[in-house]
Amino acid sequence: NGIVAIVGRPNVGKSTIFNRMIGERKSIVEDTPGVTRDRIYGKAEWLTKEFRIIDTGGIQLADQPFQEEIKMQVEIAIDEADAIVFVVSGKEGLTPDDEYIARLLQRSGKPVILAVNKVDNQQLNDSIYEFYALGLGDPIAVSGVHGIGIGDVLDAIIQSFPKETRKEYEGMTRFCVIGRPNVGKSSLVNAILNQERVIVSNVEGTTRDAIDTPFKREGKDYVVIDTAGIRKRGKVYENIEKYSVLRAMSAIERSDVVLVVIDGETGIREQDKHVAGYAHEAGKGVIIVYNKWDTVEKDEQTMNKITKEIRTQFLYLSYAPILFVSAKNKQRIQTILPEIDKVHDYSLMRIQTNVLNEVLMDAQLMTPPPTHNGKRLKIYYASQVAVAPPTFVLFVNEPELLHFSYQRFLENRLREAFSFEGTTLKIIARERN
Ligand code: GDP
Image 1 (cartoon, protein in one colour):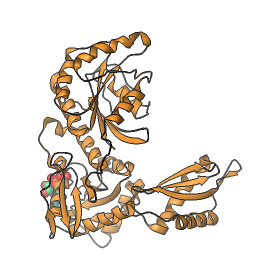
Image 2: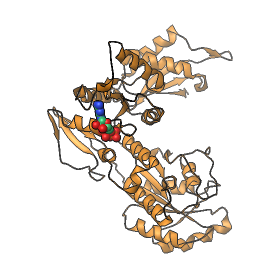
Image 3: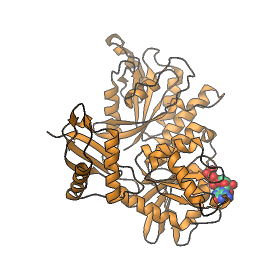
Protein backbone atom coordinates (compact mmCIF):
# COMPACT_ATOMS: atom_id res chain seq x y z
CA ASN A 1 0.00 0.00 0.00
CA GLY A 2 2.26 2.75 -1.26
CA ILE A 3 2.12 6.05 -3.06
CA VAL A 4 3.58 6.50 -6.53
CA ALA A 5 4.14 9.89 -8.16
CA ILE A 6 4.48 10.57 -11.86
CA VAL A 7 6.89 13.33 -12.89
CA GLY A 8 8.28 14.61 -16.16
CA ARG A 9 8.37 17.72 -18.30
CA PRO A 10 5.12 18.88 -19.95
CA ASN A 11 3.66 16.89 -22.84
CA VAL A 12 5.61 13.70 -22.37
CA GLY A 13 2.27 12.00 -21.68
CA LYS A 14 2.12 11.85 -17.89
CA SER A 15 -1.62 12.02 -17.61
CA THR A 16 -2.15 9.48 -20.39
CA ILE A 17 -0.02 7.06 -18.41
CA PHE A 18 -1.72 8.10 -15.17
CA ASN A 19 -5.12 7.36 -16.69
CA ARG A 20 -3.90 4.01 -17.98
CA MET A 21 -2.65 3.08 -14.55
CA ILE A 22 -5.87 3.98 -12.77
CA GLY A 23 -7.71 2.13 -15.50
CA GLU A 24 -9.76 5.07 -16.61
CA ARG A 25 -9.95 6.34 -20.12
CA LYS A 26 -12.66 8.85 -19.46
CA SER A 27 -10.66 11.99 -18.98
CA ILE A 28 -9.64 13.73 -22.13
CA VAL A 29 -5.96 14.28 -22.50
CA GLU A 30 -4.96 16.89 -24.98
CA ASP A 31 -1.60 17.28 -26.55
CA THR A 32 -1.60 20.98 -25.83
CA PRO A 33 0.61 22.57 -23.23
CA GLY A 34 -1.10 24.08 -20.21
CA VAL A 35 -4.27 22.04 -20.42
CA THR A 36 -5.75 21.91 -16.96
CA ARG A 37 -6.36 18.44 -15.74
CA ASP A 38 -8.59 17.77 -12.86
CA ARG A 39 -7.75 14.34 -11.68
CA ILE A 40 -4.37 14.21 -10.06
CA TYR A 41 -4.92 11.41 -7.61
CA GLY A 42 -6.04 7.87 -8.29
CA LYS A 43 -5.98 4.27 -7.18
CA ALA A 44 -4.29 1.46 -9.06
CA GLU A 45 -4.38 -2.26 -8.57
CA TRP A 46 -1.78 -4.66 -9.92
CA LEU A 47 -0.98 -8.24 -8.96
CA THR A 48 -3.39 -7.96 -6.04
CA LYS A 49 -1.48 -4.96 -4.67
CA GLU A 50 -3.17 -1.63 -4.34
CA PHE A 51 -1.45 1.70 -4.42
CA ARG A 52 -2.16 5.38 -5.04
CA ILE A 53 -0.87 7.44 -7.89
CA ILE A 54 -0.27 11.18 -8.06
CA ASP A 55 0.06 12.98 -11.37
CA THR A 56 2.26 15.87 -10.29
CA GLY A 57 1.81 17.49 -13.70
CA GLY A 58 -1.65 18.47 -12.57
CA ILE A 59 -0.25 20.64 -9.77
CA GLN A 60 0.75 23.91 -11.34
CA LEU A 61 2.10 27.21 -10.14
CA ALA A 62 0.68 30.36 -11.64
CA ASP A 63 3.16 32.39 -13.72
CA GLN A 64 6.30 30.62 -12.68
CA PRO A 65 9.21 29.79 -14.92
CA PHE A 66 9.37 26.18 -16.02
CA GLN A 67 12.29 25.31 -13.78
CA GLU A 68 10.44 26.51 -10.67
CA GLU A 69 7.34 24.61 -11.61
CA ILE A 70 9.08 21.34 -12.35
CA LYS A 71 11.16 21.69 -9.23
CA MET A 72 8.00 22.01 -7.19
CA GLN A 73 6.48 18.97 -8.87
CA VAL A 74 9.55 16.85 -8.28
CA GLU A 75 9.77 18.08 -4.68
CA ILE A 76 6.16 17.07 -4.08
CA ALA A 77 6.85 13.68 -5.64
CA ILE A 78 9.88 13.15 -3.41
CA ASP A 79 7.97 14.30 -0.31
CA GLU A 80 4.83 12.33 -0.89
CA ALA A 81 5.74 9.19 -2.77
CA ASP A 82 7.37 5.85 -2.04
CA ALA A 83 8.32 5.41 -5.70
CA ILE A 84 8.53 7.78 -8.64
CA VAL A 85 7.73 7.15 -12.29
CA PHE A 86 9.80 9.53 -14.40
CA VAL A 87 8.28 9.89 -17.86
CA VAL A 88 10.37 10.99 -20.85
CA SER A 89 9.55 10.96 -24.54
CA GLY A 90 11.17 8.57 -26.99
CA LYS A 91 9.75 10.60 -29.82
CA GLU A 92 11.49 13.83 -28.85
CA GLY A 93 14.51 12.12 -27.33
CA LEU A 94 16.62 13.17 -24.37
CA THR A 95 16.36 16.89 -23.53
CA PRO A 96 18.24 19.14 -21.09
CA ASP A 97 15.03 19.43 -19.07
CA ASP A 98 15.01 15.65 -18.64
CA GLU A 99 18.59 15.85 -17.41
CA TYR A 100 17.64 18.56 -14.93
CA ILE A 101 14.80 16.45 -13.54
CA ALA A 102 17.04 13.38 -13.39
CA ARG A 103 19.54 15.27 -11.23
CA LEU A 104 16.81 16.30 -8.77
CA LEU A 105 15.60 12.72 -8.59
CA GLN A 106 19.02 11.17 -8.14
CA ARG A 107 19.54 13.10 -4.93
CA SER A 108 16.24 11.93 -3.45
CA GLY A 109 17.21 8.33 -2.81
CA LYS A 110 13.69 7.25 -3.80
CA PRO A 111 13.24 4.40 -6.28
CA VAL A 112 12.80 5.83 -9.77
CA ILE A 113 11.19 3.99 -12.66
CA LEU A 114 12.19 5.48 -15.99
CA ALA A 115 9.38 5.21 -18.54
CA VAL A 116 10.13 6.18 -22.15
CA ASN A 117 6.75 7.11 -23.56
CA LYS A 118 5.53 7.48 -27.16
CA VAL A 119 7.32 4.30 -28.23
CA ASP A 120 4.25 3.53 -30.29
CA ASN A 121 5.77 0.88 -32.56
CA GLN A 122 8.66 -1.56 -32.88
CA GLN A 123 10.75 0.78 -35.05
CA LEU A 124 10.90 3.27 -32.20
CA ASN A 125 12.19 0.69 -29.73
CA ASP A 126 15.82 1.74 -30.13
CA SER A 127 14.96 5.25 -29.00
CA ILE A 128 15.07 4.13 -25.39
CA TYR A 129 18.83 3.52 -25.27
CA GLU A 130 19.97 7.13 -25.09
CA PHE A 131 18.08 7.44 -21.78
CA TYR A 132 20.59 5.20 -20.06
CA ALA A 133 22.65 8.39 -19.91
CA LEU A 134 20.33 9.69 -17.17
CA GLY A 135 21.86 7.20 -14.76
CA LEU A 136 18.49 5.99 -13.51
CA GLY A 137 18.73 2.37 -14.56
CA ASP A 138 16.92 0.51 -17.32
CA PRO A 139 14.45 2.58 -19.32
CA ILE A 140 11.10 0.91 -20.01
CA ALA A 141 9.50 1.41 -23.42
CA VAL A 142 5.91 2.57 -23.10
CA SER A 143 3.09 3.77 -25.28
CA GLY A 144 0.49 5.45 -23.13
CA VAL A 145 -1.77 5.93 -26.11
CA HIS A 146 -1.67 2.26 -27.09
CA GLY A 147 -1.36 0.90 -23.58
CA ILE A 148 1.95 -0.81 -24.36
CA GLY A 149 4.48 -1.34 -21.56
CA ILE A 150 2.18 -0.11 -18.80
CA GLY A 151 2.26 -3.57 -17.24
CA ASP A 152 6.07 -3.46 -17.15
CA VAL A 153 5.95 -0.11 -15.38
CA LEU A 154 3.46 -1.48 -12.87
CA ASP A 155 5.67 -4.54 -12.31
CA ALA A 156 8.65 -2.28 -11.65
CA ILE A 157 6.60 -0.21 -9.21
CA ILE A 158 5.56 -3.28 -7.24
CA GLN A 159 9.15 -4.50 -7.16
CA SER A 160 10.38 -1.18 -5.84
CA PHE A 161 8.14 -1.39 -2.78
CA PRO A 162 9.70 -2.89 0.32
CA LYS A 163 8.94 -6.61 0.53
CA GLU A 164 7.30 -6.43 3.88
CA THR A 165 5.28 -3.31 4.40
CA ARG A 166 4.76 -3.04 8.09
CA LYS A 167 1.65 -1.13 8.93
CA GLU A 168 2.49 2.40 9.84
CA TYR A 169 1.99 3.04 13.56
CA GLU A 170 1.09 -0.53 14.34
CA GLY A 171 -1.43 -0.87 17.14
CA MET A 172 -2.26 2.82 17.22
CA THR A 173 -5.46 4.50 16.14
CA ARG A 174 -4.64 6.82 13.27
CA PHE A 175 -6.96 9.70 12.53
CA CYS A 176 -6.90 12.92 10.56
CA VAL A 177 -8.88 16.12 10.57
CA ILE A 178 -10.01 17.45 7.22
CA GLY A 179 -12.18 20.30 6.01
CA ARG A 180 -11.99 23.48 4.03
CA PRO A 181 -9.78 26.34 5.27
CA ASN A 182 -10.80 28.09 8.50
CA VAL A 183 -13.35 25.55 9.67
CA GLY A 184 -11.16 25.14 12.75
CA LYS A 185 -9.05 22.06 12.00
CA SER A 186 -5.93 23.26 13.78
CA SER A 187 -7.94 24.60 16.68
CA LEU A 188 -9.62 21.24 16.99
CA VAL A 189 -6.37 19.29 16.89
CA ASN A 190 -4.95 21.59 19.54
CA ALA A 191 -8.04 21.24 21.68
CA ILE A 192 -7.80 17.45 21.48
CA LEU A 193 -4.10 17.46 22.32
CA ASN A 194 -4.51 19.89 25.20
CA GLN A 195 -7.12 17.81 26.97
CA GLU A 196 -6.46 16.45 30.40
CA ARG A 197 -4.77 13.06 30.43
CA VAL A 198 -3.54 13.42 26.86
CA ILE A 199 0.19 12.86 26.73
CA VAL A 200 1.81 13.99 23.53
CA SER A 201 4.94 11.99 22.86
CA ASN A 202 7.88 13.44 21.05
CA VAL A 203 8.39 10.36 18.94
CA GLU A 204 8.45 11.66 15.43
CA GLY A 205 6.60 10.23 12.50
CA THR A 206 8.39 7.06 11.54
CA THR A 207 8.19 7.20 7.80
CA ARG A 208 7.53 10.84 7.04
CA ASP A 209 9.16 13.76 8.73
CA ALA A 210 7.55 14.96 11.95
CA ILE A 211 4.20 15.78 10.46
CA ASP A 212 2.24 13.33 12.56
CA THR A 213 1.57 13.71 16.27
CA PRO A 214 1.44 10.53 18.35
CA PHE A 215 -0.15 10.70 21.79
CA LYS A 216 -1.53 8.57 24.56
CA ARG A 217 -4.72 8.76 26.53
CA GLU A 218 -5.78 6.33 29.21
CA GLY A 219 -3.35 3.73 27.99
CA LYS A 220 -4.44 3.95 24.38
CA ASP A 221 -2.21 5.13 21.55
CA TYR A 222 -3.35 7.53 18.86
CA VAL A 223 -1.72 9.46 16.04
CA VAL A 224 -3.09 12.59 14.44
CA ILE A 225 -1.95 12.25 10.88
CA ASP A 226 -0.44 15.15 9.00
CA THR A 227 -1.05 17.92 11.45
CA ALA A 228 1.64 19.94 9.68
CA GLY A 229 -0.54 19.95 6.62
CA ILE A 230 -2.97 21.77 8.84
CA ARG A 231 -0.36 24.03 10.34
CA LYS A 232 0.83 25.16 6.91
CA ARG A 233 4.53 24.73 6.43
CA GLY A 234 5.08 27.77 4.28
CA LYS A 235 6.36 26.33 1.04
CA VAL A 236 5.07 28.21 -2.01
CA TYR A 237 3.01 25.38 -3.27
CA GLU A 238 1.24 24.72 -0.04
CA ASN A 239 -1.41 27.22 -0.88
CA ILE A 240 -2.26 25.61 -4.18
CA GLU A 241 -5.74 24.19 -3.88
CA LYS A 242 -4.83 20.96 -5.66
CA TYR A 243 -1.87 20.40 -3.41
CA SER A 244 -3.99 20.78 -0.29
CA VAL A 245 -6.51 18.35 -1.74
CA LEU A 246 -3.65 15.96 -2.41
CA ARG A 247 -2.37 16.30 1.14
CA ALA A 248 -5.84 15.67 2.50
CA MET A 249 -6.13 12.58 0.31
CA SER A 250 -2.88 11.11 1.50
CA ALA A 251 -3.76 11.92 5.12
CA ILE A 252 -7.06 10.13 4.60
CA GLU A 253 -5.31 7.12 3.11
CA ARG A 254 -3.01 6.86 6.08
CA SER A 255 -5.81 7.10 8.65
CA ASP A 256 -8.26 4.69 10.22
CA VAL A 257 -10.79 7.37 11.04
CA VAL A 258 -11.39 10.74 9.41
CA LEU A 259 -12.93 13.72 11.15
CA VAL A 260 -14.76 15.85 8.60
CA VAL A 261 -15.04 19.31 10.09
CA ILE A 262 -17.86 21.68 9.22
CA ASP A 263 -17.89 25.32 10.23
CA GLY A 264 -21.04 25.95 12.25
CA GLU A 265 -20.63 29.67 11.84
CA THR A 266 -20.94 29.61 8.05
CA GLY A 267 -22.94 26.39 7.74
CA ILE A 268 -22.51 23.69 5.11
CA ARG A 269 -20.84 24.67 1.86
CA GLU A 270 -20.44 22.86 -1.45
CA GLN A 271 -16.74 22.28 -0.80
CA ASP A 272 -17.56 20.44 2.43
CA LYS A 273 -19.30 17.80 0.36
CA HIS A 274 -16.25 17.21 -1.83
CA VAL A 275 -14.03 16.86 1.20
CA ALA A 276 -16.44 14.43 2.85
CA GLY A 277 -16.78 12.51 -0.40
CA TYR A 278 -13.08 11.65 -0.40
CA ALA A 279 -13.30 10.19 3.10
CA HIS A 280 -16.31 8.13 2.11
CA GLU A 281 -14.72 6.83 -1.10
CA ALA A 282 -11.58 5.82 0.73
CA GLY A 283 -13.71 3.54 2.91
CA LYS A 284 -12.44 5.01 6.16
CA GLY A 285 -14.29 5.51 9.39
CA VAL A 286 -15.96 8.92 9.22
CA ILE A 287 -17.15 11.28 11.95
CA ILE A 288 -18.77 14.58 11.10
CA VAL A 289 -17.66 17.29 13.49
CA TYR A 290 -19.83 20.37 13.51
CA ASN A 291 -17.47 22.95 14.99
CA LYS A 292 -17.94 26.52 16.26
CA TRP A 293 -21.10 25.38 18.02
CA ASP A 294 -20.58 28.38 20.34
CA THR A 295 -21.47 30.75 17.51
CA VAL A 296 -24.77 29.04 16.68
CA GLU A 297 -27.88 30.64 18.03
CA LYS A 298 -29.88 27.77 19.36
CA ASP A 299 -33.04 26.52 20.92
CA GLU A 300 -34.00 22.95 21.73
CA GLN A 301 -34.73 22.25 18.02
CA THR A 302 -31.46 23.45 16.58
CA MET A 303 -29.46 20.26 16.92
CA ASN A 304 -32.21 18.22 15.29
CA LYS A 305 -32.61 20.70 12.49
CA ILE A 306 -28.90 20.76 11.72
CA THR A 307 -28.67 16.98 11.97
CA LYS A 308 -31.44 16.73 9.38
CA GLU A 309 -29.70 19.20 7.14
CA ILE A 310 -26.41 17.29 7.38
CA ARG A 311 -28.22 14.05 6.57
CA THR A 312 -29.81 15.60 3.48
CA GLN A 313 -26.62 17.25 2.28
CA PHE A 314 -24.37 14.25 2.91
CA LEU A 315 -26.65 11.44 1.83
CA TYR A 316 -23.84 8.95 1.30
CA LEU A 317 -22.60 9.53 4.88
CA SER A 318 -25.77 8.41 6.62
CA TYR A 319 -23.63 6.05 8.73
CA ALA A 320 -21.37 8.79 10.12
CA PRO A 321 -21.99 9.99 13.68
CA ILE A 322 -22.25 13.75 14.14
CA LEU A 323 -20.61 15.65 16.98
CA PHE A 324 -21.42 19.24 17.86
CA VAL A 325 -18.37 20.87 19.39
CA SER A 326 -16.59 24.11 20.00
CA ALA A 327 -12.83 23.99 19.70
CA LYS A 328 -12.69 27.49 21.07
CA ASN A 329 -14.71 26.88 24.24
CA LYS A 330 -13.55 23.25 24.59
CA GLN A 331 -17.14 22.18 24.42
CA ARG A 332 -17.61 18.40 24.06
CA ILE A 333 -14.02 17.96 22.92
CA GLN A 334 -13.73 15.04 25.33
CA THR A 335 -16.35 13.13 23.32
CA ILE A 336 -14.16 13.01 20.23
CA LEU A 337 -11.62 10.32 21.17
CA PRO A 338 -14.23 7.87 22.51
CA GLU A 339 -16.18 8.39 19.29
CA ILE A 340 -13.04 7.71 17.26
CA ASP A 341 -12.50 4.50 19.26
CA LYS A 342 -16.04 3.38 18.65
CA VAL A 343 -15.93 4.01 14.91
CA HIS A 344 -12.52 2.36 14.64
CA ASP A 345 -13.82 -0.72 16.46
CA TYR A 346 -16.81 -0.97 14.15
CA SER A 347 -14.62 -0.70 11.08
CA LEU A 348 -12.58 -3.66 12.40
CA MET A 349 -15.55 -5.72 13.50
CA ARG A 350 -15.84 -9.28 12.19
CA ILE A 351 -19.21 -10.99 12.09
CA GLN A 352 -19.30 -14.72 12.60
CA THR A 353 -20.34 -16.48 9.45
CA ASN A 354 -23.32 -18.28 10.95
CA VAL A 355 -24.66 -15.08 12.52
CA LEU A 356 -24.16 -13.16 9.30
CA ASN A 357 -25.98 -15.80 7.28
CA GLU A 358 -28.84 -15.88 9.71
CA VAL A 359 -29.38 -12.13 9.35
CA LEU A 360 -29.14 -12.17 5.57
CA MET A 361 -31.33 -15.24 5.13
CA ASP A 362 -33.99 -13.69 7.35
CA ALA A 363 -33.82 -10.51 5.32
CA GLN A 364 -34.17 -12.48 2.11
CA LEU A 365 -37.15 -14.39 3.43
CA MET A 366 -38.97 -11.35 4.75
CA THR A 367 -38.31 -9.18 1.71
CA PRO A 368 -37.38 -11.31 -1.27
CA PRO A 369 -35.33 -9.65 -3.99
CA PRO A 370 -37.47 -8.22 -6.79
CA THR A 371 -37.56 -10.14 -10.07
CA HIS A 372 -35.81 -8.91 -13.19
CA ASN A 373 -36.90 -10.24 -16.57
CA GLY A 374 -38.53 -13.09 -14.77
CA LYS A 375 -35.40 -13.93 -12.82
CA ARG A 376 -34.82 -13.52 -9.13
CA LEU A 377 -31.61 -13.10 -7.20
CA LYS A 378 -30.88 -15.99 -4.90
CA ILE A 379 -28.37 -15.56 -2.12
CA TYR A 380 -26.95 -18.93 -1.10
CA TYR A 381 -24.33 -17.97 1.34
CA ALA A 382 -22.46 -14.93 2.66
CA SER A 383 -19.10 -14.38 4.22
CA GLN A 384 -17.19 -11.41 5.59
CA VAL A 385 -13.90 -11.31 3.72
CA ALA A 386 -12.30 -8.13 5.04
CA VAL A 387 -12.43 -5.36 7.62
CA ALA A 388 -11.78 -1.61 7.36
CA PRO A 389 -14.19 -1.34 5.69
CA PRO A 390 -16.15 -4.48 6.54
CA THR A 391 -16.57 -6.30 3.25
CA PHE A 392 -19.09 -9.03 2.57
CA VAL A 393 -19.21 -11.43 -0.32
CA LEU A 394 -22.58 -12.86 -1.25
CA PHE A 395 -22.54 -16.07 -3.25
CA VAL A 396 -25.53 -15.86 -5.57
CA ASN A 397 -27.07 -17.37 -8.66
CA GLU A 398 -26.38 -14.35 -10.91
CA PRO A 399 -24.38 -11.37 -9.63
CA GLU A 400 -26.04 -8.97 -12.12
CA LEU A 401 -29.33 -9.53 -10.34
CA LEU A 402 -28.13 -7.73 -7.22
CA HIS A 403 -29.43 -4.26 -7.82
CA PHE A 404 -28.53 -1.14 -5.95
CA SER A 405 -31.80 -0.85 -4.07
CA TYR A 406 -31.67 -4.40 -2.79
CA GLN A 407 -28.04 -3.99 -1.86
CA ARG A 408 -29.04 -0.90 0.11
CA PHE A 409 -31.77 -2.92 1.79
CA LEU A 410 -29.29 -5.61 2.84
CA GLU A 411 -26.89 -2.99 4.09
CA ASN A 412 -29.64 -1.52 6.24
CA ARG A 413 -30.40 -4.96 7.67
CA LEU A 414 -26.73 -5.43 8.53
CA ARG A 415 -26.69 -2.05 10.24
CA GLU A 416 -29.82 -2.84 12.20
CA ALA A 417 -28.20 -6.04 13.40
CA PHE A 418 -24.64 -4.88 14.00
CA SER A 419 -24.71 -1.06 13.84
CA PHE A 420 -21.35 -0.55 12.08
CA GLU A 421 -21.64 3.10 13.02
CA GLY A 422 -19.19 5.35 11.23
CA THR A 423 -18.00 2.89 8.64
CA THR A 424 -19.04 2.15 5.07
CA LEU A 425 -19.90 -1.43 4.21
CA LYS A 426 -18.92 -3.14 1.01
CA ILE A 427 -21.18 -5.80 -0.41
CA ILE A 428 -19.97 -7.82 -3.37
CA ALA A 429 -21.94 -10.44 -5.26
CA ARG A 430 -20.11 -13.47 -6.68
CA GLU A 431 -21.48 -16.32 -8.70
CA ARG A 432 -21.55 -19.56 -6.76
CA ASN A 433 -19.87 -22.26 -8.72
P1 GDP B 1 -8.20 25.64 9.94
O1 GDP B 1 -7.83 26.46 8.76
O2 GDP B 1 -9.35 24.74 9.58
O3 GDP B 1 -7.11 24.93 10.61
O4 GDP B 1 -8.87 26.66 11.00
P2 GDP B 1 -8.24 27.31 12.32
O5 GDP B 1 -8.13 26.29 13.39
O6 GDP B 1 -7.03 28.06 11.95
O7 GDP B 1 -9.41 28.28 12.73
C1 GDP B 1 -9.92 29.29 11.88
C2 GDP B 1 -10.56 30.39 12.72
O8 GDP B 1 -11.72 29.89 13.37
C3 GDP B 1 -9.65 30.91 13.82
O9 GDP B 1 -9.86 32.31 13.90
C4 GDP B 1 -10.15 30.20 15.08
O10 GDP B 1 -9.92 30.93 16.22
C5 GDP B 1 -11.63 30.10 14.78
N1 GDP B 1 -12.24 28.94 15.47
C6 GDP B 1 -11.82 27.66 15.47
N2 GDP B 1 -12.67 26.88 16.22
C7 GDP B 1 -13.62 27.70 16.69
C8 GDP B 1 -14.79 27.49 17.51
O11 GDP B 1 -15.12 26.40 17.99
N3 GDP B 1 -15.57 28.58 17.77
C9 GDP B 1 -15.28 29.82 17.27
N4 GDP B 1 -16.08 30.81 17.56
N5 GDP B 1 -14.18 30.04 16.50
C10 GDP B 1 -13.38 29.01 16.21
